[in-house]
Amino acid sequence: MKNNNFLIIFGLVAIISFTITFYSTTAFAQSTNQTSTLQSQQQQNSFCKLTESDMLGPFYKEGAPFKERFGEGVEGERLIITGKVMDTRCQPIQDAILDVWQANSTGEYDNNGFTLRGKIKTNSDGTYLIDTILPKEYVAGDINRPGHIHLKVGAPNQPILTTQLYFEGDPYLTDREDKSLVMKVTDENGTKKANFDFIIEHYDQYEK
Ligand SMILES: [Fe+2]
Image (cartoon, rainbow, N blue to C red; front, side):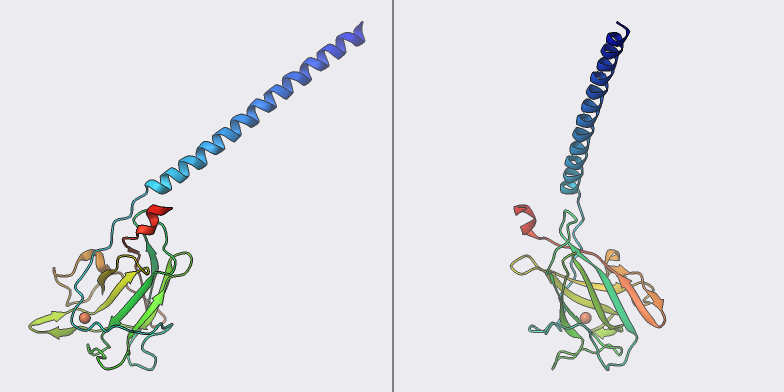
């Protein structure tokens, strides 16, 4: 009789343990599913503000080649700008093209060749790197322009953003330059470093 009671109690304990384990595992799976659904909803709902555009200016030249390093052998302080190109959902854009042109360290453009003109493509995570020299200010008509980098940014068959990037602390900056386009600049062993993320219109994002 004692043995029978023991077996009944053992059986009940086994059934209760199994039931508790089953329900807690199911509840965990459900909560994990809910978390990942919520995360992807948040990702879809996140919003990045479009980068401001800026004037094209008179010195743009089509047909610049792809380059890893700008201004090879050109006098000037080396400058590295890094960042990402993203859509308005803050998703990185792979193979976006940055078409870059700029003045040299005495404020002059190469209007005959492609010195300090070139294209760069973003990586699979949307990152880019511009390895160049620091452009200097120049006079355009009766206006002193602060040092700046011109860019057209966009993926093939998508809208192209035309804008300019400026450098914090430049004494020639005025109210004409949008503050959101002014980069902080640091100095690392004689190389200037700056960071800028571009947010551009990209209609592929709506097909995903
Ligand atoms: Fe310019």
